[in-house]
Image (cartoon, rainbow, N blue to C red; front, side):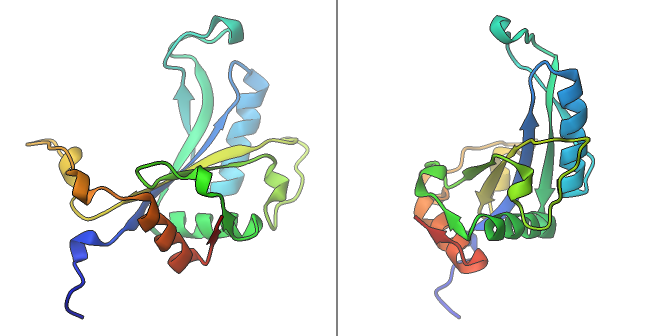
Length: 171
């Protein structure tokens, strides 16, 4: 097939699953169990970046857990989430760079999940990031460069990718 530029192909880079509980020790234990149950991966502690006196949070304090899924793990997890949410995605969930975020209020909403008394009722967020070949120039060690505007992923391209690869209806 001539005319198809490989450098213009959009691909799923990663899916980040995040549970934030704030300054709550029992909640941290529950969040770790839930994220392990959902992703079957070992989570990493997320720490606070700034001080929020109202919530008794200070920089460096662990406030949640996150896991980054890549390649086939990311695609399988996203497929599972979309099927559980009725294969729909709100257009307002997408940002200008074509990434999107979803929130799941309760993990029991997902197909195949059973109630766990140790965890209780808890939700999570997921963020999907999309890239093109050549995006490495912004994160490489030597000669970092900005990605030109014409090469950035757009909202419309992500909508097309999600519709074609996951069969999702974007509203």
